Image (cartoon, rainbow, N blue to C red):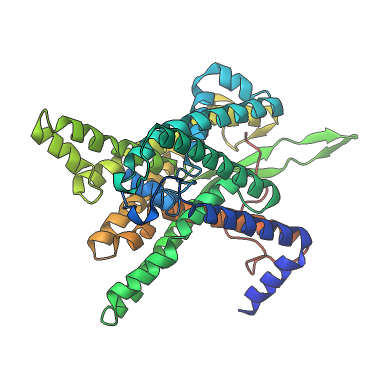
Length: 438
């Protein structure tokens, strides 16, 4: 406990770090206040929760802003969607590949295109959002209300994007990820209290057991997030000033879960399709429509089986587009590095690809298990709200953002010669002497 208080004291003793933390808290407070400002023309007392399926996922990520029909109802998610689209385009379209290689100027162009695409996506999603609002909650349902709501929702998303950029520049951590994490974490206290009340005194032991299980699940997600496979790299001897300098021995860290949370997001997006098709197909063929509707039920066996399979597929897909063994091998060859016992060039690329394929399989399986754990928790008696924190997108995002923020704080402490947040002086899982491979 003394170590904790000493670390907190050291954190606030650094002027720049203290300012960044306070700035971050201020921006987060603005974001949370905006999630309670209801759209003009909406009667808050008549609002009913329509956040089911994929809408329920969005509402969880947005901290309830979706079901509150607030000006931040769409939050930062359109920007995330636009960023994913641009990321895929930079891989598939030569024009964007060329733009990405232009350095700072290319990055500015991509950011500008991302912002424009964000506006387009937000306008399209705002129409769907207005359609999901309960008609009784709309005071004046007319064309002016629709157009004004579209403009306000778009402005709210752009303001959230601005807040995220300000947190990155003036605060601590990645701003966009921080806003998503805060939206998720804001629902944890309420879910925890509701679960404790529902168990009452007779179920106190069950509630304590649930907390213990949740703790071990969080530790497992931390392990998945931090796990890496180190590929040793040796650099040839270099001559300088008439003397030879021994080659450095470093390593390339390949993450077991290089895809992060993206496979779950992609899979969830596809799992929303059966519900839409089923509702339209029911009039044509009731049996097919009923099957598709059942397939979209997040608590059915078929749904979870298909969901886990899609996560496995998308994990390999996203890892393949985010980690390029050929580029890594080329960069190593140009810098005079090589994997001991492996020839430079094509052999190195094949070796890295083989290692990546082997570590991706257990990572994908573990990610699929984590993704469907909330369903099992709900089936075993955990409330719907609290069970969402037993895995899935919510838990992985929270763990990833917290670890990234702790790493940044750790760096500030070590630069000022303070002890880090762990007794060893560094967070477990942090990498040192990493070979630059991209």
